[in-house]
Length: 176
Ligand code: 5GP
Image 1 (cartoon, rainbow, N blue to C red):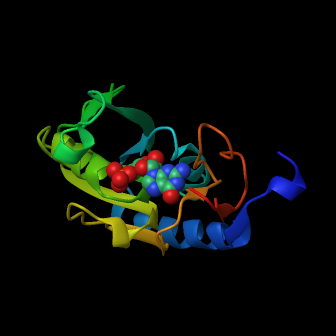
Image 2: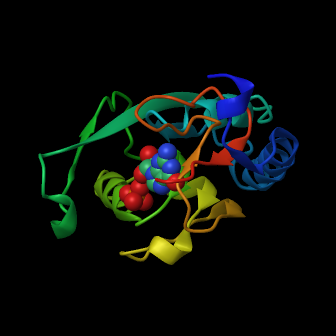
């Protein structure tokens, strides 16, 4: 990747930092003193999670889950996911799901339903980016960073074929 091939910046690193700051303040108000479990969805949320938890100055645990699909063609049914990697007990815990972007909503809708069946004491969702124009299932996001247009975004953890995750800004990848 060189400077010529850099996609157009939509949200600068400074704007991201200010947004993460605001979200951390909101989360702190609700989760302070609760020893929460922050559950990131891989891979896209790793950078957001790393920045967010450094602004949460109280005891917490971090875990990451991965949602993989059953196979091709299942997305349209909405039954596309298998949750992998959840090692902590969720029952009775104060859980906060941390997601990079909510698009159709299928991923988080599935995960929130899956987690709620495990009877956490508190279950909320934080998403850095929200693309509501593409929603296919209703999702209630408790902490929303920035609402984005219907464009394919890369950077700050978001990829295109595993590339661009390392960009410090959220950028628009044209032609996607
Ligand atoms: P959903 O299930 O809400 O449709 O999709 C959520 C996942 O799709 C996100 O965690 C992310 O991995 C991927 N995704 C959705 N929109 C974008 C986008 O604009 N860019 C990239 N790189 N990934 C996206």
